Image (tube, rainbow, N blue to C red):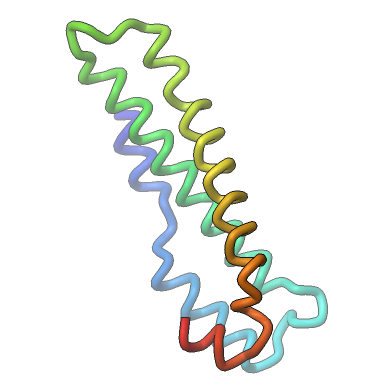
Length: 108
């Protein structure tokens, strides 16, 4: 039941991104950065929903060889690995200077 709750709580990126980009083009909340904040919060919400779902499904469908320590450490390790790989990917992209022109951001 808890894993189903995580799936139901997830926000659809198709709805949020389209709506926020439309509001951003109209100029609503741009000075305070509200559309960008909502996009980031929706992304973070999806990360929490996916991590929580996988954690509780892993606990519900426990294999014979996995211990409780492995199940408990799975959630924090997933977050730590995700942060580390995200920072590494961001550092690689920033080193290439790929985002220094608007047309490059559009193409990539």
